[in-house]
Length: 205
Image (cartoon, rainbow, N blue to C red; front, side, top):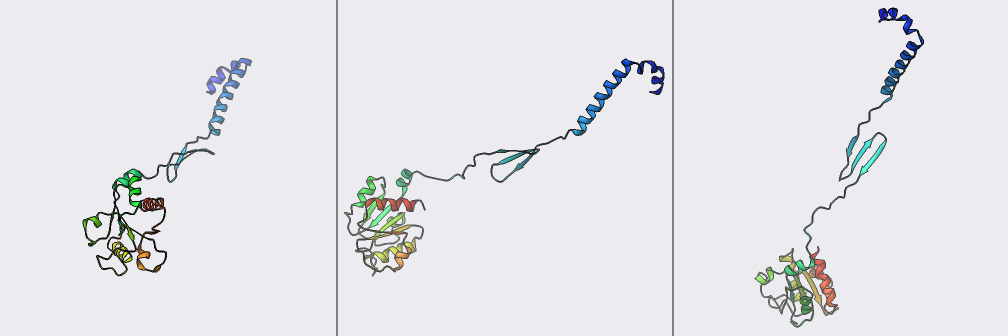
């Protein structure tokens, strides 16, 4: 390098040489400075619980939100429930008008019997929801408390089945065990819609 400078000394220190060398120096040091001042920023992806992804680029935060799907539920339509749920009214008044109203409303497997004489009968085992009148039933099985005794026996023997007590009487033993065990209770003169609503609520539990 020194030999070259000695050989080309006149040219280097001439106006043209100084200009060219100065320009090259400027370019060289400019690139070096740019390289030293350049900070490489690599994106860091942080995953949160769920479906949110935070992408951090330097000081910037870009949040991508994805719709979180609920766990798939085996939800069934009310029509499907109506086609499968079996409802049995135990009432000595077999002309109870609610029965026909429920059938017309889609609860096609609704039946009524005066009483039952066997807790293990096929009819009982296939029933999903029992509606038990307090008066006039349970006599065939010898329950002293009639419908209350029958309702309590059904719920005790079949805890997974639903038992609803209803009565036209406004008086009675409010502390009977059957009332505590039953899933619901209604007045017999309640609106038919209330019976239907009770069934729907029990099916959704």
